[in-house]
Length: 197
Image (cartoon, rainbow, N blue to C red; front, top):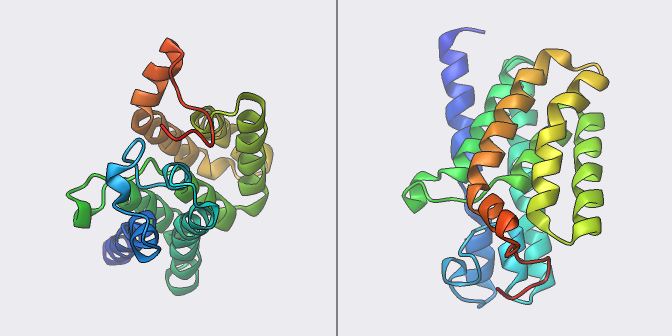
């Protein structure tokens, strides 16, 4: 893949990933400014704190869908090598959107959507990892951390070892974006799923 294709795939992925669906949905549904609710995060977990489950599901689907779309379109238009670049760029766009002064979400749904589109067996395994951890603990951030930490292992296990580097990079980014959650987990103050605060 030449440098121009690399750059276009990254730019396209970033711009698509930077669309803040959580903010858009809560505004359209008259739920207020999401950045002033709960944790202030723009993702689905915080949207759920508005009490509107439909808004939370919509945010989850669209935040995952934008990364999946970036991967699929890059693969179709520029080839397989462009797909992980566009997906990673979409993840970065969600976490650091230019429209919100680079203050975005934590990227969990975007990460899962990316994995589902890039290698669907790995994506399903990551989703299942999140689900099991979140159901056991009722803490969304623990599910996210477990899923991200396992992603490189799942990539190797399902025959996508050449993409394990991507799993490692995403895991580092997910853990970094969750550094405040990790601190609250250590202190026993991390809110549980469905909590208003």
